[in-house]
Image (cartoon, rainbow, N blue to C red; front, side, top):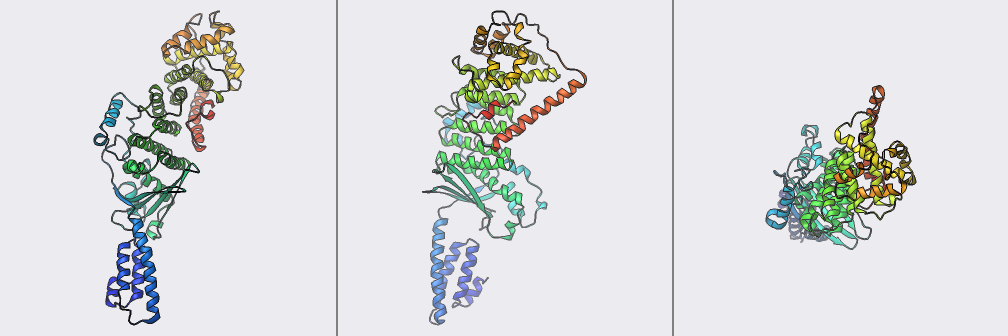
Length: 532
């Protein structure tokens, strides 16, 4: 590569200018490349013959390309992504307190009232993947600056949004601060016609960056996007439509799930929900529902948080007034019940399932749970009662609350068995129907009649709170001093092992299978009808 000095020493060295321009282009120093072309065109052309003319034409063509590149580069915005020192109120990079005092006041009020969503500690300073950072000594010296910039240090990004006929493009270039060449270029395309998003990344031809381990290459684009959205998400959202934002982040979240990066999938959902709130998008509740769905599907570790968010969504008209909702309150209460059950909180699970049934009123049919929200919630309620009975039988659930739940569950089994609801629905209900034989005889004669049993159950569900529901059901018993058998010896130990393993396996495996196949806010029978 010729130097500036070698060209200056021989002003007629036109070929040297061509090589110098190419070298500047490889370093992304396009302004310097333009100056070198200009100097090359001003050299003495009185001698050198035809070769000189060819070089001049080459420089003119290079000038055209460099000018186009400079115009293109002027469209990019440049930002330094630093490592924050304080957890933000919302992701997205907006100072809510100064720029939107009304929103700030609303959030503070909700936090003070115990909002599960706005008090989430998952708003981490850096993406979850950054916890996988290894000691820099594990990497080749040339790669260490890249790893440091990605995981723990400042990261320079240049980015732009371009609207085209085929869709919207978001391009992000990631740099080590001080470098002129990006170590990764990231482009996301959102197609309105295909109603989908896709993204790809590329790495400049540089041995230093090509030496990145394969896992870091896969993770780099995700980390860059997470850090970018944390600090510039609202600014980018101002240049994108809400649909473009949703499809872009939905695609990336799905890719995280394919890579088994469940916490990062949740992180992207939280980013989208926060940005939607800060940017004033519609359908805020929908984005929060997606977040909760990912939380309770994620390795069965965030079930209580997911359930609390579902409860918050179901008990309010919306996270904020005017936000849209795709899932009805009955459905969301059902999701909350399932999440609480997975967390082993059967008391709150029962309350949410009953709330889901109550919202359907009395005018609903006992049909296939996959086609009817109320039937689906009822089925899950019965599975919850059955789980409590199993846990008590093996000695794992023995508190007064557990025994109380079993009594209530026995009455429900008895009523629905006498009303032939359990038998008619088929499937797993047939197994549950067996238990009703030993319980319906404990009902008062009035409620043991087929024509009265169903109305008695629906009357209990219509009560305004869970305590009234339970008291009403227990009032149907001839006497309340019901005793329940418990296993002993080897049978007890075997049952305990089976209960623990089956519940853990179902919560984790079925959840991840559900996410791998794609999850939607609209009712999906796989969510509610699996025997968990």
